[in-house]
Figure 1 (cartoon, rainbow, N blue to C red):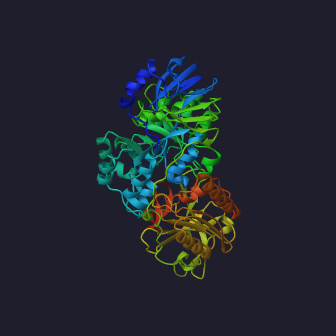
Figure 2 (cartoon, rainbow, N blue to C red):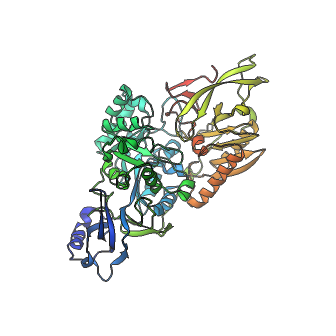
Figure 3 (cartoon, helix red, strand yellow):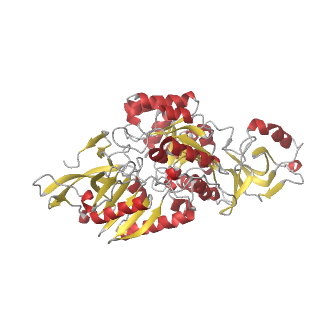
Length: 597
């Protein structure tokens, strides 16, 4: 572990190096200092680093170079603060914290604020502690937000474990906990639910940051009530009005570009066109799968996208460095190249395109030209974290049958409508045919079956419904134990025998993703840790994930990042229609609803 001394511990040495009385550990010479406090680029500057922190930045720090000082020649390149991801879920990368860090460090990400509420739903507080502990082992900064909502919507789903206010209060004493993860139960906050307010109070009493999640288009009284409840940020905005409303209420607007969420372009106009103060806007990823990380990047990708959307590079850079640090109360600790802060810096030859040519974290070169140069240590994950898929029985085709009302030849069914590149779904209806008393999907209209299979307690329960938007054809099934946020098992298919085979296969391999076509498995991604993550290298997981995407396309799917859409079909806190172990959920009303009208 590349630990870093606290500022008070390091201060005597930092002062001596800055004054020229002692040599630095590392000096970067003759670069362009990108200062996110003053929003300037200052050419011809050196950076002196000691004890993993910045000691001084000045035009000439040759006095700080001793016989053992490492010297890096910037050669006129830009010296940029390491990038910060303000809101993300490591589990969405299908990777453990160690392998996630290994994947993103070469892209210039040196700080992450992570909400492990995926594992919280499967393993509870013990799972959160495992994620927290592996995060602290890494050579970059990974702060943990204590999950707030497991279940995300009480009464509408059943999770493997529940998070209680006393769990939140306990976690506030852990060294890597920075605040509360996204408060998804926004109806609970709006109606002053005592449990939700107790969680928020525990965090505020610890003087930490409360994360928000307001997934409703209503910006009137409900939103005002939510803001009054204490959440300090929100990443669920999808349009300019959402971004403006959040900052006007004193919240930070977090704009995300993940693998499937493209919410920057529609909101950044609040800054680029409306001229609002950019210091209250933050960039984040929320969810990135391993393929995106390996092939496209991480926060460097988000930054480039913001610039492509018309944001001035220095403003975009503030949105993924100092703005993030300030929001979490860490402005004196990271987020800028200024004295005393952690020495996290990127060397790049182009400020707008941001090729990440060298990454320094805590004063140590950790990556160069896309190659990781340090070890990212692994936690010793126990068997309890690797045996989490409990089906209770071997499933068969009849478990996936949907019986029609007696005597019906057709039914009007509610159908989950997938919206490409967005988290919300549409509540659709369709008239479907009945054969031998069983309601059938309709391939011609793109309507497949969806099933949620209970996998935490081995009840053998299967909730069945219909979904439209994937475009699947022929005999196929696709299943995943990544099913936000309860993380049961979601199987989508056109053939009930394939759906049963797919579910059983996921049970055999302890979780992951499996794609079936014409009686055989054609792709799989084993995720043995909590049914959510692999501790294999990111490139290996990405290769399997790429084959999974190809297999979905071979089954007729044309959606961009369809896997992310698949994994969110049980997310019962985002409108309009979802599925849970308790039934079909109308998220506009936050209540269970019948499958047939």
